[in-house]
Length: 235
Image (cartoon, rainbow, N blue to C red; front, top):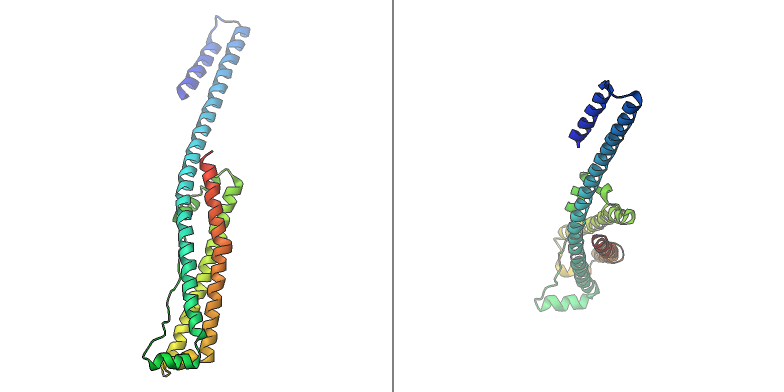
Protein backbone atom coordinates (compact mmCIF):
# COMPACT_ATOMS: atom_id res chain seq x y z
CA UNK A 1 0.00 0.00 0.00
CA UNK A 2 2.86 2.38 0.80
CA UNK A 3 4.38 1.67 -2.62
CA UNK A 4 1.12 2.69 -4.31
CA UNK A 5 0.99 5.96 -2.38
CA UNK A 6 4.62 6.72 -3.31
CA UNK A 7 3.88 5.86 -6.94
CA UNK A 8 0.97 8.30 -7.18
CA UNK A 9 2.89 11.00 -5.29
CA UNK A 10 5.61 10.72 -7.94
CA UNK A 11 2.95 11.05 -10.64
CA UNK A 12 1.74 14.31 -9.10
CA UNK A 13 5.31 15.60 -9.07
CA UNK A 14 5.82 14.66 -12.74
CA UNK A 15 2.50 16.22 -13.69
CA UNK A 16 3.48 19.52 -12.10
CA UNK A 17 6.84 19.46 -13.92
CA UNK A 18 5.33 18.41 -17.29
CA UNK A 19 5.43 21.49 -19.51
CA UNK A 20 3.46 19.81 -22.32
CA UNK A 21 0.17 19.83 -20.33
CA UNK A 22 -1.99 22.88 -19.85
CA UNK A 23 -2.77 24.16 -16.34
CA UNK A 24 -6.26 22.74 -16.53
CA UNK A 25 -4.98 19.29 -17.50
CA UNK A 26 -2.42 19.40 -14.70
CA UNK A 27 -5.06 20.35 -12.13
CA UNK A 28 -7.34 17.57 -13.34
CA UNK A 29 -4.58 14.95 -13.19
CA UNK A 30 -3.44 16.17 -9.76
CA UNK A 31 -7.00 15.96 -8.37
CA UNK A 32 -7.33 12.40 -9.68
CA UNK A 33 -3.98 11.37 -8.16
CA UNK A 34 -4.84 13.01 -4.81
CA UNK A 35 -8.18 11.19 -4.80
CA UNK A 36 -6.37 7.90 -5.42
CA UNK A 37 -3.91 8.62 -2.58
CA UNK A 38 -6.70 9.56 -0.15
CA UNK A 39 -8.62 6.45 -1.09
CA UNK A 40 -5.51 4.28 -0.65
CA UNK A 41 -4.74 5.79 2.77
CA UNK A 42 -8.36 5.41 3.90
CA UNK A 43 -8.46 1.81 2.70
CA UNK A 44 -5.16 1.08 4.41
CA UNK A 45 -6.42 2.52 7.72
CA UNK A 46 -9.69 0.59 7.42
CA UNK A 47 -7.91 -2.69 6.66
CA UNK A 48 -5.55 -2.17 9.59
CA UNK A 49 -8.46 -1.38 11.95
CA UNK A 50 -10.42 -4.37 10.66
CA UNK A 51 -7.44 -6.68 11.11
CA UNK A 52 -6.75 -5.33 14.61
CA UNK A 53 -10.41 -5.64 15.61
CA UNK A 54 -10.55 -9.19 14.27
CA UNK A 55 -7.44 -10.09 16.27
CA UNK A 56 -8.93 -8.54 19.42
CA UNK A 57 -12.16 -10.50 19.04
CA UNK A 58 -10.18 -13.71 18.51
CA UNK A 59 -8.44 -12.99 21.83
CA UNK A 60 -11.83 -12.36 23.47
CA UNK A 61 -13.13 -15.67 22.10
CA UNK A 62 -10.16 -17.59 23.55
CA UNK A 63 -10.53 -15.75 26.85
CA UNK A 64 -14.27 -16.47 27.12
CA UNK A 65 -13.72 -20.15 26.26
CA UNK A 66 -11.13 -20.45 29.04
CA UNK A 67 -13.34 -18.43 31.39
CA UNK A 68 -16.26 -20.76 30.73
CA UNK A 69 -14.10 -23.73 31.76
CA UNK A 70 -13.06 -21.85 34.91
CA UNK A 71 -16.68 -21.09 35.77
CA UNK A 72 -17.75 -24.69 35.25
CA UNK A 73 -14.99 -25.73 37.65
CA UNK A 74 -16.14 -22.99 40.04
CA UNK A 75 -19.66 -24.42 40.09
CA UNK A 76 -18.27 -27.86 40.98
CA UNK A 77 -16.04 -26.34 43.67
CA UNK A 78 -18.97 -24.38 45.09
CA UNK A 79 -21.09 -27.54 45.29
CA UNK A 80 -18.22 -29.35 47.02
CA UNK A 81 -17.72 -26.51 49.50
CA UNK A 82 -21.43 -26.31 50.32
CA UNK A 83 -21.49 -30.06 50.90
CA UNK A 84 -18.42 -29.81 53.15
CA UNK A 85 -20.01 -26.99 55.16
CA UNK A 86 -23.23 -28.98 55.52
CA UNK A 87 -21.41 -32.10 56.70
CA UNK A 88 -19.29 -30.29 59.30
CA UNK A 89 -22.31 -28.30 60.48
CA UNK A 90 -24.27 -31.51 60.99
CA UNK A 91 -21.38 -32.97 62.98
CA UNK A 92 -21.08 -29.85 65.16
CA UNK A 93 -24.83 -29.79 65.73
CA UNK A 94 -24.67 -33.41 66.89
CA UNK A 95 -21.98 -32.43 69.40
CA UNK A 96 -24.08 -29.49 70.58
CA UNK A 97 -27.11 -31.76 71.00
CA UNK A 98 -25.27 -34.21 73.27
CA UNK A 99 -26.51 -34.09 76.85
CA UNK A 100 -24.31 -34.67 79.89
CA UNK A 101 -25.75 -38.15 80.34
CA UNK A 102 -25.12 -39.00 76.68
CA UNK A 103 -21.52 -37.81 76.98
CA UNK A 104 -21.14 -39.94 80.14
CA UNK A 105 -22.44 -42.95 78.28
CA UNK A 106 -20.07 -42.42 75.33
CA UNK A 107 -16.96 -42.09 77.47
CA UNK A 108 -17.92 -44.91 79.86
CA UNK A 109 -18.07 -47.20 76.83
CA UNK A 110 -14.64 -45.83 75.80
CA UNK A 111 -16.16 -44.15 72.75
CA UNK A 112 -15.04 -40.89 71.18
CA UNK A 113 -16.82 -37.77 69.96
CA UNK A 114 -15.61 -36.95 66.48
CA UNK A 115 -14.74 -33.30 65.98
CA UNK A 116 -14.48 -32.72 62.19
CA UNK A 117 -11.86 -30.33 60.86
CA UNK A 118 -12.46 -28.77 57.46
CA UNK A 119 -10.89 -25.44 56.61
CA UNK A 120 -11.98 -23.53 53.53
CA UNK A 121 -9.70 -21.62 51.20
CA UNK A 122 -9.37 -20.31 47.64
CA UNK A 123 -11.75 -22.51 45.65
CA UNK A 124 -12.55 -20.27 42.67
CA UNK A 125 -10.30 -19.95 39.61
CA UNK A 126 -9.11 -16.41 38.87
CA UNK A 127 -5.95 -16.93 36.77
CA UNK A 128 -7.45 -16.40 33.30
CA UNK A 129 -9.45 -13.39 34.42
CA UNK A 130 -6.50 -11.75 36.19
CA UNK A 131 -4.22 -12.33 33.19
CA UNK A 132 -6.71 -10.83 30.72
CA UNK A 133 -7.49 -7.89 33.01
CA UNK A 134 -3.86 -7.08 33.80
CA UNK A 135 -3.06 -7.00 30.06
CA UNK A 136 -5.70 -4.28 29.64
CA UNK A 137 -7.85 -6.37 27.29
CA UNK A 138 -11.13 -6.46 29.24
CA UNK A 139 -12.27 -3.52 27.10
CA UNK A 140 -12.12 -5.80 24.03
CA UNK A 141 -15.37 -7.42 25.21
CA UNK A 142 -18.00 -5.56 23.19
CA UNK A 143 -21.07 -6.87 25.02
CA UNK A 144 -21.25 -4.34 27.84
CA UNK A 145 -23.69 -6.39 29.97
CA UNK A 146 -21.52 -9.49 29.74
CA UNK A 147 -18.41 -7.45 30.61
CA UNK A 148 -20.11 -5.97 33.68
CA UNK A 149 -21.27 -9.40 34.88
CA UNK A 150 -17.73 -10.75 34.54
CA UNK A 151 -16.33 -7.76 36.47
CA UNK A 152 -18.99 -8.13 39.18
CA UNK A 153 -18.28 -11.84 39.56
CA UNK A 154 -14.51 -11.48 39.90
CA UNK A 155 -14.35 -8.14 41.71
CA UNK A 156 -17.31 -8.52 44.09
CA UNK A 157 -18.52 -12.10 44.45
CA UNK A 158 -15.20 -13.98 44.39
CA UNK A 159 -13.63 -11.67 47.04
CA UNK A 160 -16.82 -12.04 49.11
CA UNK A 161 -16.49 -15.83 49.08
CA UNK A 162 -12.83 -15.59 50.05
CA UNK A 163 -13.71 -13.24 52.90
CA UNK A 164 -16.47 -15.41 54.40
CA UNK A 165 -14.22 -18.47 54.14
CA UNK A 166 -11.45 -16.55 55.92
CA UNK A 167 -13.81 -15.49 58.72
CA UNK A 168 -14.91 -19.10 59.11
CA UNK A 169 -11.34 -20.40 59.21
CA UNK A 170 -10.34 -17.75 61.75
CA UNK A 171 -13.19 -18.77 64.00
CA UNK A 172 -12.35 -22.45 63.55
CA UNK A 173 -8.89 -21.62 64.90
CA UNK A 174 -10.57 -19.98 67.89
CA UNK A 175 -12.30 -23.29 68.57
CA UNK A 176 -8.89 -24.98 68.57
CA UNK A 177 -7.59 -22.27 70.91
CA UNK A 178 -10.50 -22.96 73.27
CA UNK A 179 -9.57 -26.64 73.23
CA UNK A 180 -5.94 -25.83 74.10
CA UNK A 181 -7.02 -23.37 76.81
CA UNK A 182 -9.06 -26.17 78.37
CA UNK A 183 -6.42 -28.86 78.00
CA UNK A 184 -6.79 -29.67 81.68
CA UNK A 185 -10.41 -30.68 81.10
CA UNK A 186 -11.65 -33.98 79.74
CA UNK A 187 -13.47 -33.97 76.37
CA UNK A 188 -16.71 -34.60 78.24
CA UNK A 189 -16.17 -31.47 80.35
CA UNK A 190 -15.11 -29.47 77.30
CA UNK A 191 -18.17 -30.37 75.23
CA UNK A 192 -20.41 -29.62 78.24
CA UNK A 193 -18.84 -26.23 78.86
CA UNK A 194 -21.38 -23.44 78.04
CA UNK A 195 -18.71 -21.07 76.68
CA UNK A 196 -17.30 -23.75 74.39
CA UNK A 197 -20.79 -24.64 73.19
CA UNK A 198 -21.47 -20.98 72.39
CA UNK A 199 -18.29 -20.86 70.33
CA UNK A 200 -19.35 -23.97 68.45
CA UNK A 201 -22.85 -22.57 67.91
CA UNK A 202 -21.35 -19.48 66.31
CA UNK A 203 -19.18 -21.63 64.05
CA UNK A 204 -22.32 -23.40 62.84
CA UNK A 205 -23.97 -20.03 62.16
CA UNK A 206 -20.97 -18.94 60.13
CA UNK A 207 -21.10 -22.18 58.16
CA UNK A 208 -24.79 -21.65 57.37
CA UNK A 209 -24.13 -18.07 56.33
CA UNK A 210 -21.35 -19.18 54.01
CA UNK A 211 -23.60 -21.79 52.42
CA UNK A 212 -26.10 -18.99 51.77
CA UNK A 213 -23.40 -16.80 50.15
CA UNK A 214 -22.34 -19.68 47.90
CA UNK A 215 -25.89 -20.82 47.08
CA UNK A 216 -27.77 -17.54 46.68
CA UNK A 217 -25.08 -15.23 45.32
CA UNK A 218 -21.96 -16.77 43.80
CA UNK A 219 -23.27 -19.95 42.18
CA UNK A 220 -26.27 -18.34 40.41
CA UNK A 221 -24.02 -15.70 38.84
CA UNK A 222 -21.47 -18.33 37.76
CA UNK A 223 -24.24 -20.38 36.11
CA UNK A 224 -25.68 -17.26 34.47
CA UNK A 225 -22.26 -16.26 33.16
CA UNK A 226 -21.74 -19.69 31.58
CA UNK A 227 -25.01 -19.27 29.67
CA UNK A 228 -24.15 -15.71 28.61
CA UNK A 229 -20.69 -16.78 27.41
CA UNK A 230 -22.23 -19.63 25.41
CA UNK A 231 -24.51 -17.12 23.64
CA UNK A 232 -21.58 -14.83 22.90
CA UNK A 233 -19.39 -17.64 21.54
CA UNK A 234 -22.21 -18.97 19.34
CA UNK A 235 -22.94 -15.62 17.66
